[in-house]
Image (cartoon, rainbow, N blue to C red):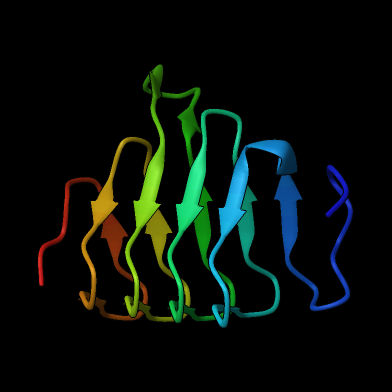
Length: 104
């Protein structure tokens, strides 16, 4: 991954040195991973296209790592805000804004 360049799968990593992606996970096209304060995606996670995952929110001044557990399913168009943990196997419906932790 290269900072601020689309991957061959057409998703955009910012601060890729702070992004961990587990094996067999799938990230949909045109997803933004803003990893300044860390993003960890577990194994077999599925993230739909057009999502935005932020570890820093300049508008609210919030920062913190985002953790997406193993086997989690994130629908297309979701926005995940800083400091959120989505547990193993949890599902997030398409076009949701996630501002607090999600448990299975």
